[in-house]
Image: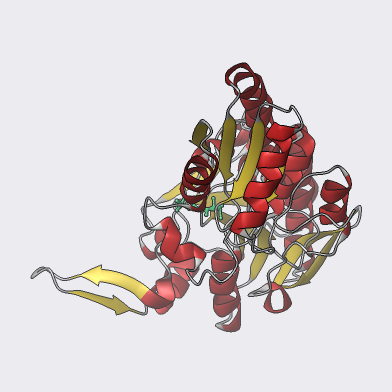
Length: 362
Ligand code: F6P
């Protein structure tokens, strides 16, 4: 069997489990398919400037399974098709450096690229595939908002961290008779808020998919106090919004005026109770992956190496039910998965008496 030389790169925001993918792909490729690996650092930036490559062998991947982040570095900038360049006189413009990447790929004598990343990385991977680059995609995001895969690795770790935060907030909320607001990540989707809120036993869960009514939400908290529950825990997704509110999540994230901040202020003003706000932020993305994310990352990595061996390029690994499958990258990009307001998960939360942004029907 002739030896295939395979590059791996990680792009976009990091997610716990990236190192599990790298390790599994390298181990599988070396032991089963006689492949040789290099790592391209900082996403596609490392293909623009080829000094940013490292050798990936068994020594390089030893001990990385429990590590958070990515040993290859990552960036959510640096799209080679639309690359930001600053000239010597300080002027900024964009340039298409994709041909340079293709040449560098050739000069590194590579046979394949495994691109691990979110939707942005998959878009770039698809464009390179269309230019003739043999690429295999591996999806990642803590937000779990990609339609093409039932679950992405990183999500379980984020939910676990957020659940633990809710557990911790419970005891202090109860001691001080406060309303605690916990803002969690998830971009435009409410998966982290909803799952962590249910798992942590929150009283309110506000997600972008269900715009909440201010009066309604306040009435819910007031009723809790009136019934003798002297505290409340509200989990607010970073893109949650009040009904009729126009701002997009992206606009809001650029300001310090986040949905959690708004909601906490609302409770303070309308109910005259003590409120405290916690914005969990990147704590949800950092640190060691849970065993579920290690497993999923590992299974994705093994399948990515198998796809390279089969020369099944232009495909992305995915989870379908309990099976690892692969789909055309083209079919996976730009398709997001959102919480269904009338789906099972919201019904589960509401069945427990959790307020999810609309009056409970029972
Ligand atoms: O997509 C992952 C994610 O962590 C989102 O949940 C969050 O909105 C965003 O990335 C944060 O991005 P950054 O790390 O660039 O601040």
